[in-house]
Length: 90
Image 1: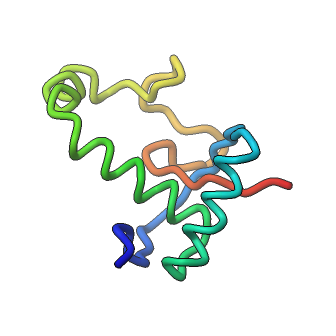
Image 2: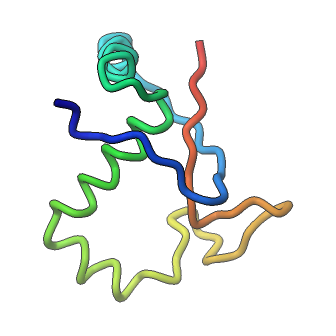
């Protein structure tokens, strides 16, 4: 039974990531296994990570207005900087 269920959430933003070949292969396999796309697998895996890391919640409460990229909570060109969608590249 897959740990990550299909789901969509409101507005998305694009985030570029680089993966080694084996991780990319496993991501694609898990997406196929769970009937999801790669974006949803990454989003779900990050949600699991954030929920499981008990030290992250108190830390994020004091840093919640930061965007992680040094720009605060501002958005650029109408992009929702609070959500994230990871685009798959070849």
